[in-house]
Image 1: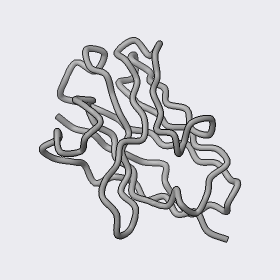
Image 2: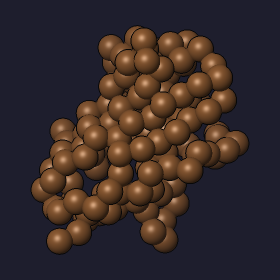
Image 3: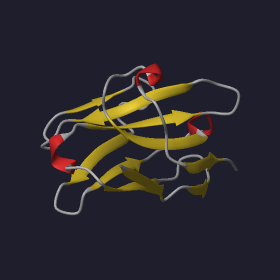
Image 4: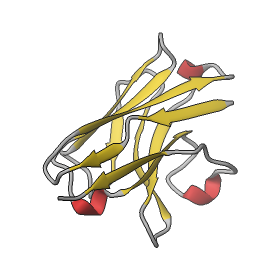
Length: 119
């Protein structure tokens, strides 16, 4: 299983970024997918997840209305559109095959992509 996140960077408050997660090694459209993040000094937390067909999405309260998760099952790729970014969104973002909102359910993580929101 390979999950490679990209698209992070430095952005000013109020700005936008679009994260991508290219996957390989498993049947992408057979799994719901998720984004997690880990802020400096904090535990990793669930951000959002999406069902296998891309029709139903779920968001943490902290990002509801600002972030949009989507997927392209033809390209085995997961996305996270992040708008109206805030300094508290600063974190390393990770994608994963969704097996629950608790990070304890996951055995390993990819390298992630760093998002820094700062003026």
